[in-house]
Image (cartoon, helix red, strand yellow):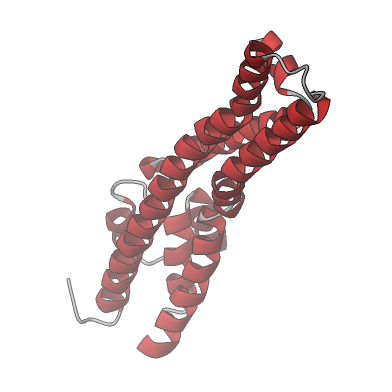
Length: 201
C-alpha cells in the first residue's frame, strides 16, 4: 500500500488527508446523531408530568435544556408558557433553528469532501500523465513502461472515488437523519404547546 502511495506521487497526499478528515467526521456524526441522544424516549411525557405537578424550577429547566436537543426545544417553550400561543411557538422555532444548525455541524465539510475528492483524484491522474509523457523522448518510448506509468497515474482517480462514494453516502444519510429528527422535535413541541394551552391532553 505504501509503495502505491509513493508511486502515485504528491497529488495523493491531499486525498489521504481528505480521507482521514472524512473518516473522523463520519465516526463523530455516527456517535453524536444517535436517536436516544437527540430524542430521549419518554422525555415529552416526563416533561408533561413535571408540568402537571407544578412545573420546573430554574435548575430543573437548565438541566432539561442541557439534557438533549429535544430538551432544549421543550425548555424554550416552557420558559414562555405564560405567554400567548404565538410567542411560545416563536420561542420554540428560534430554539429549533439553533438545534438544527448544531445537528448539521460538520455535514458541509463532509459534503465538500465528497464533491472534491474525485476532482483531486483526476488532478493527480493528469499530473501523473503529464510527467509520464514529458519524460518520453522521441523514438525511445517503451510501451510497457508507458502502460505502467499510466496505471500508476490512475491510482489517484481510483482513490478519489473510493473516498467520495462513502462520503456521499454518509452525507446523504446524515442529512436525512437530521431532517427526520427535526420533524419529530416539531411534532413533540406542538403537542407541548397544545397541552399547555389546554387544547390537548
